[in-house]
Image (tube, rainbow, N blue to C red):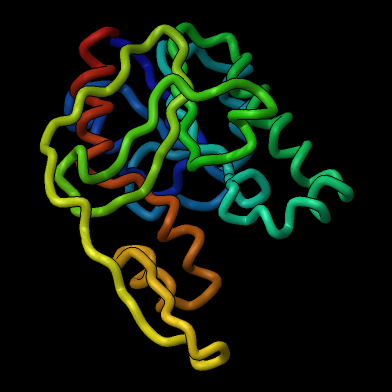
Length: 206
């Protein structure tokens, strides 16, 4: 049976989608899993060195890489945090696994390592949300949309500090209402429709 590693995932969404299809899948993250199931809490390279995997889907941290945080890039470049993030991504790309997918938002991976093979949005997979998600693929086909829906609306309000109108996608606005410590985790969770598409389409080539 093909063995699948879901790296840098604590939600269990992609792992559980593959398990539902009958695959042997395990997630790995420095955080504990939010959903009961096979999970290694620790360094993903511990698993890569000790076990054989036929497919890895990795969601490396984007905190120091995503262009949404470009205002802080100068400091993160100066203190080495951005390069450390890029080095981690490159190590994942170079892992001795036949099929690999790296997932991240629009980020400096595109300019510092290579451009993504595909950019998808949740609205292509049944969720009315606009969220550009890049995929860097090794020996995997691009994902085909499974359920194209409305791209979702925006929340508009007047900024009390500037008096100017501000606009934000409803999904992103809703996550902004969470405690700050929970926002990054909420925004990084894979939408179920995308997880199911990965299991259906990439599982079919194993």
